[in-house]
Length: 232
Image 1 (cartoon, rainbow, N blue to C red):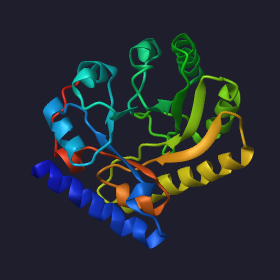
Image 2 (image 1 turned 90 degrees about the horizontal axis):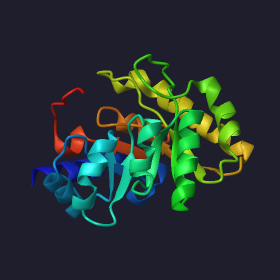
Image 3 (image 1 turned 90 degrees about the vertical axis):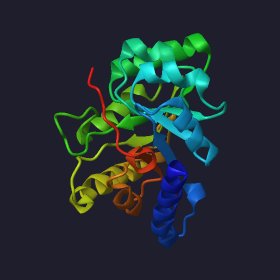
């Protein structure tokens, strides 16, 4: 019952924030981050109501895809190398990490081959951390202008990863800045761009992110507990 209890607690914490804004749990997408989590535990989480799972690595999607409950929505939330797009192009519901034209070109090419359209989020490095991927704030609108006519790519919103801090209040500005950018881009009315999802907030800071307008949060530790990662 460990995973169920954790999910229930996340729902409670989310609801305590969004109810003040007149929203319900149906308005928020909770992506369970399943990096290094085994298939049985992922399927257990799905049995308790999780419908969206996020992986950081293409290899993990490939290894787990056939073993996970059908109709689960897969999210590619980690850095995506162009040469690995072909392996997940027909498997993922949403790519969170579109951040360069070369990647957009590869997604366009592979989507044409499969005769599909691919939903993506543009990753923004609001805090301008050298260790993080993503576009800088001033690069986002020019980037969207460059790819807006890629007819196999639909930009569905923005994503960011805030710096890890003990006090989430210290990164509130990250979420506020991304929300402002989200609203600004809506006004441009770009073709193939629909600012639907604002993916920001993780286990450590999702409550602040929700307060600032997130409608998609990515929760790993809060559901599955702490994990030990092996670096490549």
